[in-house]
Image (cartoon, rainbow, N blue to C red; front, side, top):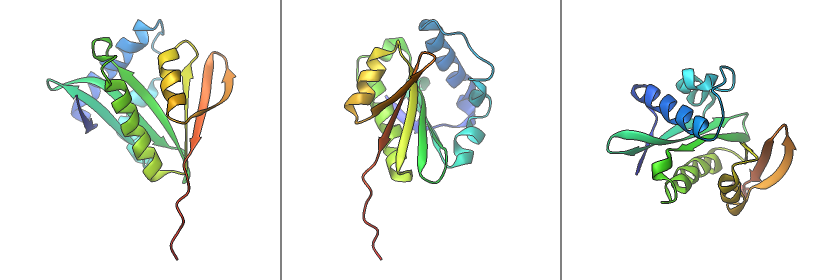
Length: 152
């Protein structure tokens, strides 16, 4: 799998991957929750964040987004991977790419996931995220990055 920065020419492929994975896990598309898919450039890049796609045979098979919430905080979103490409390190690679971007551009990062997605939760915990709260079936996690000393 090759990871590339998102381009608008991939918009429909990204939507298909995300909606396929949501459906697989029993979630219905939601016009409000999924509004970011209508304007990936504005939602992610417009805030100073980014969006990555995982590519195999010139097709999108996975996604990872980072949205800047403010000067210090980022949110990792849309870690999705087609079923046929799981358990091969691809999801971890997408997640690490998003996490690396967040660490270089923010002091801390948050994410939320459905409480039923135990493999994702394990991956977040193994990467140093701490559980913050549970709310209506969602688990919220955060990770603060070590502050590098500023050179005067």
